[in-house]
Amino acid sequence: MQVNCSGCSYRNEIDESLLPAGGMAGICPVCRTAIPLGGWQAAVAVGQTEQSAEPALPSRAEFDDDLPEEGRVSLINIIALITLVDSTLSLIGRVPGLSGVLGGGTGLTFHQQAKYLYDTLMAAGFFISVFGLMARKNWARLLIIWLFGLGLAEGLYMLLYQYFAIAELESNLHEGFPELKRQQSAKLLGCAVYAFFLYKLTTRTIRARFR
Image (cartoon, rainbow, N blue to C red; front, side):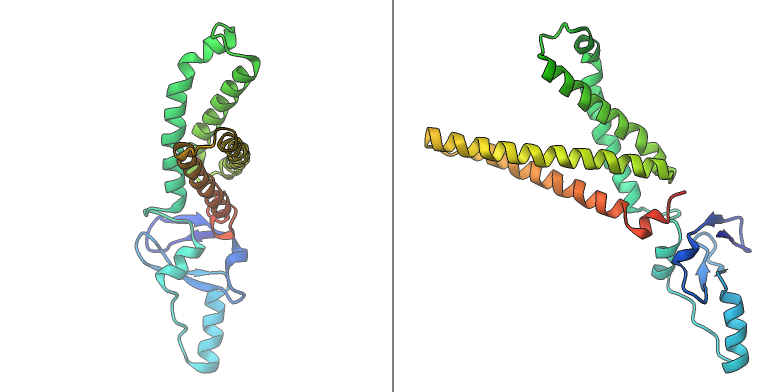
């Protein structure tokens, strides 16, 4: 449904399914004017006729859960910023060598070339999706969910592969590899961050902020 503030030029759209059955009173995030949402005005009139009582306005926190975020730091913006920095650094490191990989002049094996191209395309996909994410475009949310999913699957695979490789090295050489294990811990943390971002981008509250 369309939300229009009578006190200023603020307007936006929200998912009507997020509103309670009788509607509710919202608060404009720009000028703080009360905005009736759903059938709230009719519910107030009936309540005043029957009980002569005024319903209480929702708190700012309750209203922020239902309307898109405007003018404040949000989890979506944090995800976009982290993704932008990571993808930009990755592209800076990979794009200069892309022509050599495509031309076969780097001496890499076919598997290494395919991995190089895959990582470059992943970084490019993240870089493109960031701008759509900041503009609250749903295609960008879906694209970045797929990219996070691929990254999480790849990270979990590498964790398992390296875990067994380290265990075999320790068994054969009879010594520990603390540096490799610390790297494993860092990768596990990265997988946890990816999983958290995936979860948040699929919640109903976050979905309501995209169009």
